[in-house]
Amino acid sequence: MTALHGAIDYWCNAFLPDRLPAWQQAISNQGLGLKIERDGDEFCSPAEMIERMDGAGFDTLILVASDLRADPEVDDFEHVATRIDEIQSLAAEYPGRFKGLWSVDPTRGQADVDHAAAMLDEPWCLGLHNHTHSWNRRFDHPDFDAYYRLCSERQVPFVMQAGASGGNFPHECGHPDGIRKPATDYPDVAFLLSHTGAPWTTETIAMAVEFDNVYIGTASWPVRLWPAELVDYATGDGRTKVMYGSSFPTTGHAQAARQFLRSDLDSDLIRRITTDNARSIFTRLN
Image (tube, rainbow, N blue to C red; front, side, top):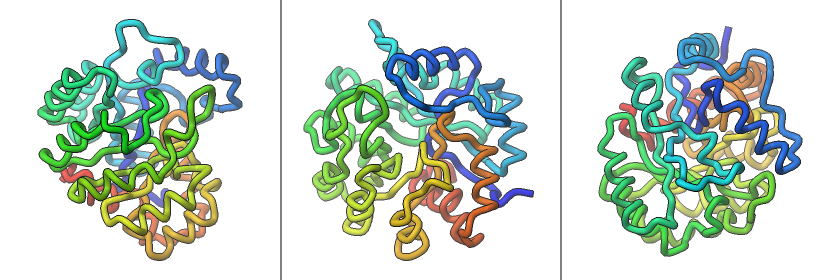
């Protein structure tokens, strides 16, 4: 029995077994106390992931995809993202079960904007993504304007990690008040502030309250650890504004199914958080 039916995970990192060493190396380098290996949510083959998704009640995983930089550092986010050939293969072999977000590199200028536009031409690509702390640029940095315009033109969402990041990354760039100008300048773009915006969850909620086009994602935070203010918002005025993400492997899909089942959230709210709210902004899913 599961509390989830037709669930969508808006942020899933690469799950294939060859990415486990990259996670282990990064965690070791940065001294993080992060558990990424748990019973039932291990790195696995595509067929094994489909079986897990079926058991946990997930219809679709939205995988964050990117290129690997020419001279990558061992801790670069791109090491744990899905490659173009991988998402193409997964989307073709398992229609509807795996989709993707293209992760932008704002240091490359117009060449990267053009590359992002090409990715949005692909049937698997649902929108754009920013691993904020890799670039130390606030959401209102001018380098992102071209991507926001592209999202407006294509009517797709922009997903970004908000709040602080684990490890040796700059943190202030993820402060949620950076979304104020983009949300004002691009009112037809849905901006999803991920990772609850912690430790600035209250400020993240304030942005979602102020702007119709700002949403909150829970990636990396297991259900049982959602802060009280986020639960209060989700159960009240934010019923249509909060959505589930795993940031696999930091949280997992079997884990989520168990915790939603044990939670005090009502079934209508669980459906909204795990399914309906994501479908409202990821319109290419429909």
